[in-house]
View 1 (tube, rainbow, N blue to C red):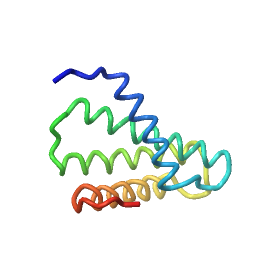
View 2 (cartoon, one colour; view 1 turned 135 degrees about the vertical axis):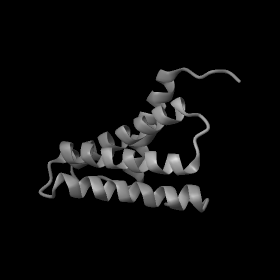
View 3 (cartoon, helix red, strand yellow; view 1 turned 180 degrees about the horizontal axis):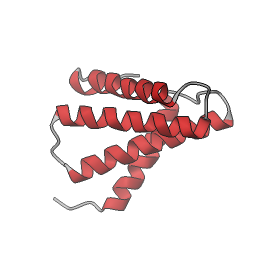
View 4 (cartoon, rainbow, N blue to C red; view 1 turned 60 degrees about the vertical axis):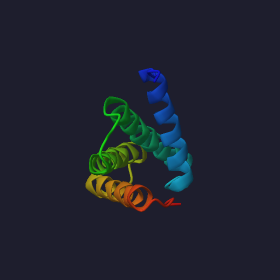
Length: 115
């Protein structure tokens, strides 16, 4: 099996994470700032998962679920920093982590698309 290089994997994770976040969640709020925030959060989510998958190729499902939840929380923090809403940072982190966990449960554990 040919070894893939790290930077193309990371770039793909960032790009796909941003696009999927925009398509799944949409700009929140529906402004340019909200769009930038959701793209930045999705890019952070994709980068973390790409890094984890690259470093741990045969990851158990439970570990992937935990890492996706952590990545979701970090993505929520990135979104909150970009948008600066009136809600608390903790609320954004918990909401995004919960959303990531729900999507992982539906998609990975049950084998159905969450969208």
